[in-house]
Length: 392
Image 1 (cartoon, rainbow, N blue to C red):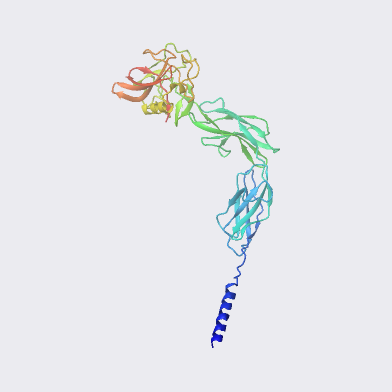
Image 2: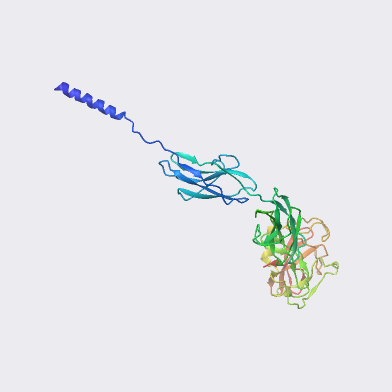
């Protein structure tokens, strides 16, 4: 009886050991199988491809897309895009391509079995011309002159060229444009129908016989401002506010009625330094051209703080309109030493009204002095000082 029990015990132990040593067999994860779609919709900078999943390898696909490079068999270490919709067939757009360049693209998919790739497809982007945009010249209130140089056409036939412009960055031929013939020679373009006192962006363009359009660099310019007398002004943007670059010199309100004014006796015949006006006139609503106005005291103070209280950054360079050649004019404000009849000599001080009053009898004005210092004071509203306008 004891031997039989001991025999059964050893049999049980052997059976348990055999079972514990048996390994369970699990299937090895397999990568998916897929093919790459033919490349279509090829332009100078974009193309369309994609892929089709032939087998998920027994595991669900977690990501899929395409990858591309200028060398065969691209991988995810180069350019790639992921399709956010998991499906057996998918499409992706390739962007940021260079014109006239040969690329290779492959579809890819990942699952627990790893990364799988489709076959490599070869394609060449269309030729896009390279251009530079000329500086803008001959700017008036409604017209300007520009143009461009086609630096490389890559052998393509240029069927149309010119400039395009808009008030937004990087205009295209869907905006306003000129058409200035064909060919690869440098070209000049006349821009018309502009709005006065407006900031524009302009780019040269050239279109190939394949319909591909290349653009030059974006150039910014401001159209001039014209007052009732026909005087023309330019403008500059400083710290978010657009200022006239010249002192105002109109002798009429914008409805044609007369303004009380005077020019400093020593001012040359071309009236470089602008006219002087009373505070009572500069605050009238018809004083300035449409879209322009006299600055507030707070706007002058903001300019003062922006230049760190240094009028040198506002003063014109040289001694054409100042006693001392210490101005840097790094803001483009181009202040002239316009003087006034109350003791400031020509080239020694520039003084401008604000629309704010200090009290019922006195208006507030700001000054830039020859040494570059700046000041703020109150003066009787019947006194005459120059004016700088800002855009609404």
